[in-house]
Image (tube, rainbow over all chains, first blue to last red; front, side, top):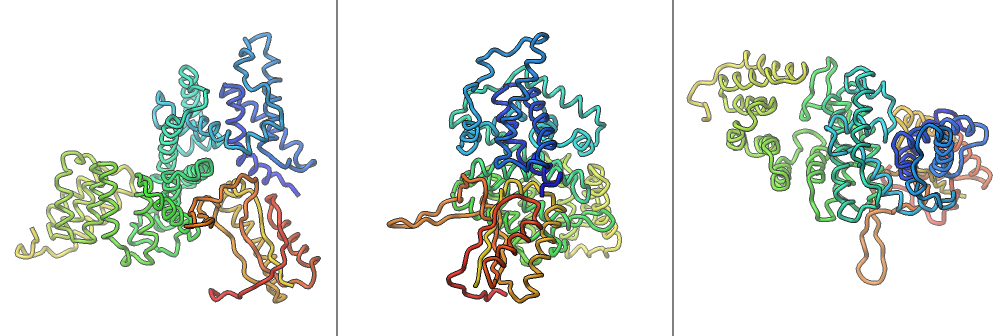
Length: 422
Length: 123
């Protein structure tokens, strides 16, 4: 009763664990990938008849290791072999592999594999591409489509990234506690970049949505490895709470639907429930971090049955916490939106105005400012701000959204100067 | 006899299902449920969120300890349950077999007689 779709799913699930163990063994990414590939092919050939092994990961590591050793033997005459010490852990038997998998040892393997993709020599877009290719195992074609580049270009990008990594490799010694925590932070950020890459383009684009799915899947894996880390709970929660709204973020004609206008029945209930559960769990640790606080903000939106039920005061307080943890004009801008809902546009504009110097080139700054000026009755100022926003829009949907405001502006009666709340 | 059918599977593998695959599995399991429901034999059913979202209260002497987890060292996690009213163990086993056929994943189904049962007020 094992069909090929199920085997494919099992291989995808086993990939990070198996590949990271093979990387530890061979200490070379290409060799490890080829070994995993060969083991997967054998799985597809033998599992349908024999049935899957009890422990698919251990099977893939064991078979992959033998395949890799065979491959190295074949090229022995042409290529210098890594020394026997470099092919470390030769004492491992199959039983030992299984034991390692059951213990917490392999946690460092997977973290290393993810961390390798976050090499500081790599620009963010190469980190993301590499993680999707190596850790998630997405086909090149799909990654290329998600990044809107040709397959050849993506292949070059990944080849270059791998070359940079092997020129300056990540040490294979087990990390100490400080290193581990630092790696975890870097990996978390990379996964959030993957998510954001998908989310920002997201809406109804299935290739972009796949990036979100992969980021969520890898974050789940990370949380299983570090089940008591509140920031990893926060990271996964944040992704789930945002992704749960995906079905409601775009209208029939591809236009952006703002949070307050979204049909909340289109939100994914179980995903929201999981996100909210994780936020509550994380906050119990009383060790707030940026992912947790952002997730807590998303959870505030998730718990409101309708937009009018949103507790904007609570959201304002959470943004204040976020401002302390991660001072940034963009955070303040977001807080201003909450402030405008809780305390009115005047209070919000007071927060927004000082940001002008730093956010003058930022689409959302002008969009928010225009919205606030409009609420205060300053039609002229609003029009100016919206025009600036349109000039800075990064997508047709963003521009269309602002244009909608401008169109509405055209039909609003001008307020008499006396009521201008200036 | 009232039985609980407890479903164990590798949540790691289940998490890799796409939305479409997951929906397809749930639809197939729904048919197995419906057959039981039609006979008036189906009690409460629940699917649980991943263990990473769980919290455990451990009571020793003194103040109970609230911890994250369970930390599953095992390959399979408790992912959900059915309650069914069956005339025999064979019938309960058959129900579990039908579930196993409907679900392409591996895993195991623990068929466990129920001692005390309070019907739900949640509907």
